[in-house]
Length: 421
Image 1 (cartoon, rainbow, N blue to C red):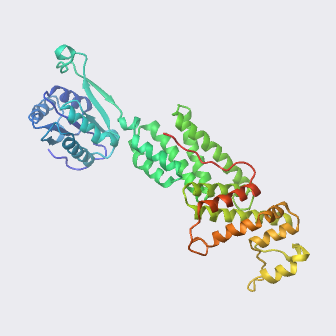
Image 2 (image 1 turned 60 degrees about the vertical axis):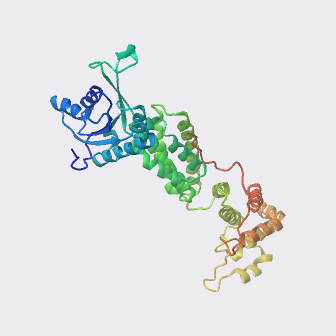
Image 3 (image 1 turned 90 degrees about the vertical axis):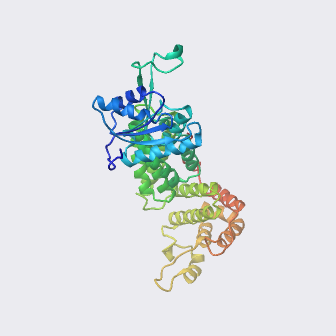
């Protein structure tokens, strides 16, 4: 009997059929599915009629479909047939919690194939055992002594491949990819694990936004994700998730501090330098040296802007000529005043010249590294992300980063957490 149509709330079973109907009948009557996909061999096919007769006699008559293995000892063949069973079930039931896989009957090869083909779907697994067996406890369960044992999907415990992927993607800051893996698998989880991974996924959305300098979204997503994870903490979570949560909590405090010091990310502040240089380090770890150096250039520029504004009370993008050192005023007005809007916009090296003239520590220190920085910035200007077509190499980033960190950063860089599953 074919299923009529997909029903979101239809309970379904995939059940392997062996040489006796009793365990299959017991399992069907226990779970009371609306649809059964029988997974049978040529030798056990005739049992299905007897199974249906017995279940119908006690008032349960589900719709069904038969998938037959021509060679019940060929694992590859049985696996392909088991996949067909899974497809039939997906046609009638959209919710993994509404599907039970019973692998009691059939050959060992059929049972193994059925488990392999369905383990990734998040279905419940069922097995009919018993305390009394024939052959001194080594044979079949004695008829009438069957016991149905129900368990969650092994996927929820192991999920080896998915966990490997998630860990790998997070370790390389590929947050979109990690989020994609979680979103495709999260609905297979039971309530508590579903809530844990919902929290992890939302924090990853926060890190994705943070890595794109969308700090406001990052703050919101990290806050929401942390609330979920902290709720789960009350009932106990895995050590790896606990370690991850602790590090997210520390990162959230840093981001919140950044939010306060920049007046909701509206004003420049030295804390932003730490964020940009940390972002550059992550691009470096991905071997994206052009992206990394572009961020370091912005950090150097911002360091100059912050120091200039602090020293003169005016900004580099609209400098007040009266606030410039008298020895440089005429030159800067002549060279940097725009003919269009009459604003004085001071570029990077010229900014640090002013600071050096004012004996500002940033300007003085910059002067010591000026020749090295000119070479580094020449390579940056020749990169494809600036004005040329040459790639930036690893050594250029490392020289540039060393100078920036030495001149302008206090303390360590911001480390995003790993999740070692």
